[in-house]
Length: 436
Length: 112
Image (cartoon, rainbow over all chains, first blue to last red; front, top):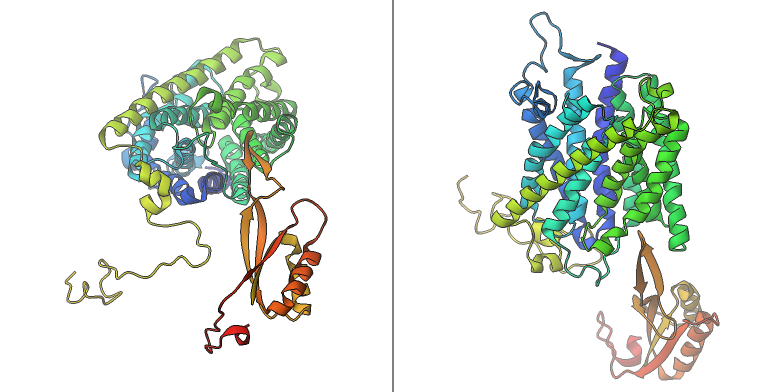
């Protein structure tokens, strides 16, 4: 065990966890004020559901002994058996140079945010219980196995697709599922007719800042060591992201006439997504190029939904799927042996083979995630129902699904109603003489 | 008595308020409002999606005053809110029958 590596991974786990509340702010500011809490709650809900499942069997499906390169043995580490306590000799199980428990915690945060990312596609209109059910089933059938494909010894890793920190496993995966759910739930009422503007751009900027901050844990933590590889990943996570923000703003300046704060925040996220799979495989030129291209292509891609007619409300497809594809594919062009010691992309004399492998891994994950999300989504829609009623959607999902409102400006004309359920609190008629 | 209502540009509010104070106007009610006249709205762009915002943010000031000072109040507001650019606003006066001060029950000009 290496204490420096362990310390860095422990911190990285906390950094990556913070990304999901950061995402909640990023998404929450982009919806209308009547649904800000629901949007944030969908993200927080993913922490609850996916976090618990990860500890019970998710880690084992991702990192257990490979069953046909498709998934890990769910029984091997069920309930983290054998990973937590010291053995009879007092030794803790290791994953590389860090305790296995630290690996479990670090990777848990990836599972959580991958699911939370999907929520942006179905803003304002999903029943909360149905969303949590989707989160549980999709994590079980898609994220945990795909994490195994990419990092746990599954087929994507075996054929040689390079994904340093989650371009395929996290971003293409969540983006494809988001597209499927946008199709399952359909467009919001009034889409393209009523204004659906972001209600709080400072929240979006704060969310982007927290995402960037946490992403240093996401990418540099994926080095699994406090070393030079983590350093490369840190520089690229900074540089590519800065370049992506510039790329997005450049497109806006040319196309719309104004560089916007939403564009800056979106460009930041597009750059972070793009550099994720490549963070420790490219030099500074490769990193800047990936970021700049991701910023430009994502800025163009977010307009596609209007042409194609699907309401991916917060552009999960345009940013995470497209950004993930850009980063994953460009590894095939700009990866360099000088940085990672094994891969050369097309522009560094490595031929076209790596580029092809990148596409195979990316497309495989994309199709699997899209199809499974479509099936799970329709199954939920046909049984318990996925979408809220029109009244709930128009009146505001916060008020109807959560019995709260995000903001109270001025007097609201509300009064306290005696609580029937809290014994002793109100001493109203209903609580008098009540027994447990 | 007269109710003077003025729709003005928000950034002129403090000038208008202090001008009325100098005239001896002892109170006013101010509301944030939206609307349009000859000045039209603006355009906003979010991730490339353009929105036309038709209503312009304005402040509405309401002052109840004696008939004899109404003209001077209108003049003070007009001068203070004037920039010469489109969208400076409007001022109008309407007759008021009764005013009651809630605390004391005083009526008419005593209640102003």
